[in-house]
Amino acid sequence: MPILEVKKLRKTFQSVVAVDNISFSVENGEIFTIIGPNGAGKTTTLEMIEGLQTPDSGEIQLKGMNWKSDSGRIKQIIGVQPQTSALFDLLTVYESLDVFAGLYKRSRSIDEILDFINLTEHRNKRVKILSGGQKQRLAIGIALVNDPDILFFDEPTTGLDPQARRNIWDIVLKLKSLGKTTILTTHYMEEAEKLSDRVCIVDQGKIIALDTPQNLIQVLSKEREIHLSFPASIKDAREIIQVVKEYPGVTKVKAEQNMLIFSTTSPEESLYHLFKYTTENQIKVEQIGIKDLSLEDVFLSYTGKEWRD
Ligand code: ADP
Ligand code: MG
Image 1 (cartoon, rainbow, N blue to C red):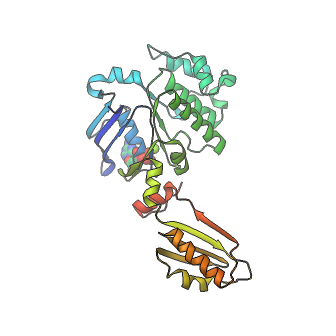
Image 2 (image 1 turned 135 degrees about the vertical axis):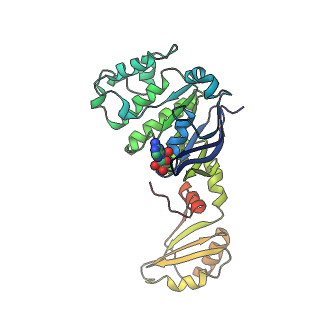
Image 3 (image 1 turned 30 degrees about the horizontal axis):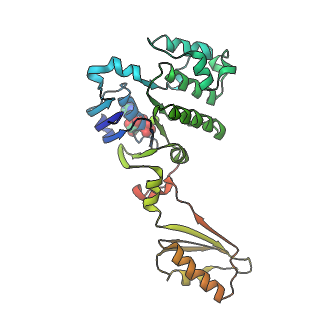
């Protein structure tokens, strides 16, 4: 049985359909990422599952329980990372955790949590002097005080520098190694790709794709983009365009100075023909690269829109 099941969830604000018939389920132990541009409906979806907003329609089951009949028990098994703006500036790190731990019957030791979020040495610092990354880690710590099974992190890495983002990823992966389930949102494709067991791509309140990162990319991976550069003496790769255009599988070709860029659904065959041509015509190829596809390409293919962080 999935640990979380969401069926036909819908939420509107006046004329805005924030979440439009979303259904998915999450298995125990998964890192499940909801990714989408600003306004896609990520926060609204998460907050409905967390019991903070009431859906217009649809069903939510957490370990087989629902908010109407089991809210008390659900609160014991979920952990919600608060917005860092909700932390109290004047409390210390330790005190912040202690305040939240006091809200639960069962709580983990604060020393253990401090160690887990790597803030032991900052335990007596006031929140207001913490860095952005440290505040996010503290907010994650607060989500952990009741030792929950399911964690919800809403854009925990937005605005952080790459190192601070990786520190958060490490915590999420440690939680997974403890068997916890994490549902997180992000608008960084790279993060979704690196961290998630499955990725749910949302746009305008709807799921446009949901699968493992590998599968999402594989669907597209028939088409690859190939870059070749020729020595500067070949001032113009444009005449090669005419030749490459005719190869089977080639969908797009362009040239920029001594660079040739083309997309093909048969990379091996296209390259075979191309190298035959360049050898026969004694054209030296300086560099060749085959672009790896990413989730950004998946988004583009489903929506027709370029992804922008
Ligand atoms: P995301 O988290 O993906 O950026 P949100 O769930 O915050 O998206 O918002 C989805 C849509 O719903 C947006 O168009 C947003 O403006 C709208 N929305 C969210 N909350 C409210 C609210 N309380 N009142 C009115 N509109 C809202
Ligand atoms: Mg949001």
